[in-house]
Length: 121
Image 1: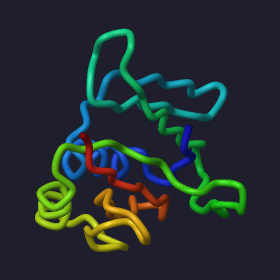
Image 2: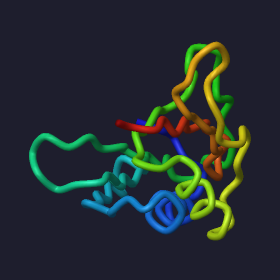
Image 3: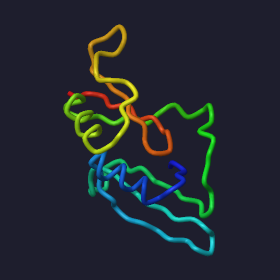
């Protein structure tokens, strides 16, 4: 779960820029929060990211325990071009991981959360 400061902006980033699908939303006005679930699939075994907007909150400290999300992609270079073309921010250009051969890159979402793109297979 990621706490976000603008739910629609985050939904737009994860769907339009990262190519995920908005799977479902939940509104809890009495509890003052809204949820959106995004992911790459709809079968029961797929992974999802829960985006939580706490009504009225405009800033979060990302904290020191959180590192980053990691997503496996078939082509890191093409994914970065897609992210860039849709206004996303690349924070580490694609290339081999230090001391290895696996190709990775990093992007940042609108709230500053880092997402590592890892090339598979």
